[in-house]
Picture (cartoon, rainbow, N blue to C red):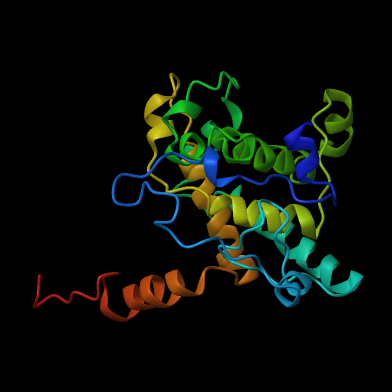
Length: 235
């Protein structure tokens, strides 16, 4: 199965990671009964949110309920892509973003440095370059002149729909932003930066971010000046 192509298809769940494939935890959590069993998402939740990446929800973006809602979602996403690639809207990060988008050689040198990928039992869905390649294909096809034709000719086509976006959002939160992949890359491609830009796009253009991070991170930063709520006197 081609995970990148399947990423944009309205298929069943892309992966399921059994507990016995996960990296072993240290004592006292190494026993089979040391941790609680996984909780399955209820049908009520699944009717509202798309968990087809791996059966879990880190964000839980609501699924569009009508074709009109889906079209609005896609239009806002595409508008956000254009802003990410604009020197006026994204000048602090544009050069680094462009370099990381354009110069990955797909050598996969970085993947063994990723703690999420290795801890999952090396599941393809958690490979940091997969998320970046999905994002790269979306940009090339939908934000570049002649992109749709080029995507078909090069075999790098990808469908843009609500499923694609829900999976991309959830995938961006299967990353710790540790940037070990960037340290391991022989040419300095920064997959963590691409992940951060994906999160930024969803947060700023679609208003979607994990509630806990938003309330205890962004809002506190804006109110106090520090995500730890430490003020100038304490510092």
